[in-house]
Length: 245
Image 1 (cartoon, rainbow, N blue to C red):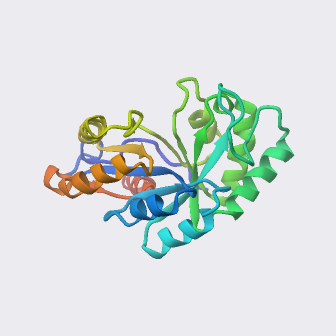
Image 2 (cartoon, rainbow, N blue to C red; image 1 turned 60 degrees about the vertical axis):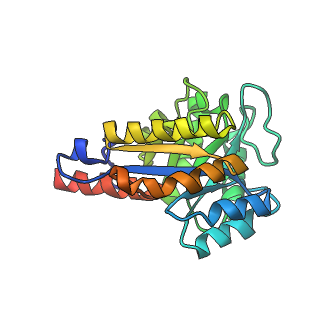
């Protein structure tokens, strides 16, 4: 697999007139059928991160795919607060075979997944050995990885690059504080980062407040010179720039 350069993808880095790119991942899809469907039905090229053991995971992944939306696996990983309240969590006391088997099972439960990000994982993403096992398996399938950056000490991005896995990191959490004014402020921060760096990645969740804000603000992106694209687009842009340069 070709090793990609991990430069920003937008106009300022590319030296052309390309618009800045925003990608938004919606985490935690798979449990709340009504809210999740409302989020999936929003206009625009959002990416949906599906929890593999959610009771509606397969149904919602298929629904997103039917609507032309991008799907990724939202892989539960152990946090510093202890075990994640999910089945199939990747934990630090697992060996390589257990990690690989859990990862394969999770992908089998999320149809159409083209990559993965981490659900929690503030502990596991600090462990180079476990991250190497994860990334070796990802490389075999040519999946990409998005580091949700639940820990500033995460080594996931570094290990992914070492294992030749396509990787990017989250720039902004949209709804860490679940109120509409805060979500709007974070949305504006995402736009600011995209304009500065050429591209930016935001992560949100299927809260009613987030749905309402996105419904209101997504249509304004084009007027601000921003294009909304799925995560995979940013990797395609990187590959194009690598060829051109």
